[in-house]
Image (cartoon, rainbow, N blue to C red):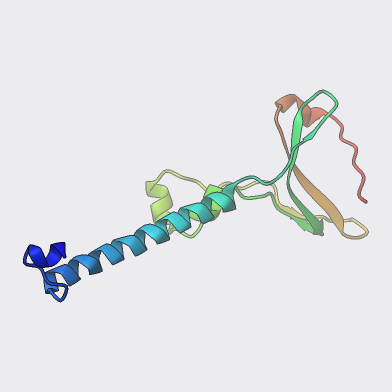
Length: 132
């Protein structure tokens, strides 16, 4: 009713354009909100930490079985790895790399675990584990 009082009928091209614009903005907002939620859920750490005897927290970052090993890659590395090298240089960013390779001389496949400690002192402690 208000549209007809102001001289705008429901078939007016201006009113149809306004609704079309609002619909597009609503769709873009819904896609952005959904993408943000998916990104947050994908990057949330779902690992529950364990504790050493001295109280240090330890989290299993990655595990592998076989004759080769490589460290887990940080999320930012996984995202930026698809950019051209020139862009990474301009951003002054170097992709992380750690010790990786193959196990030579082992009679068979091995388990490789990458652990994250909350204290640097814990890295020198002996850790016993059992695989069930």
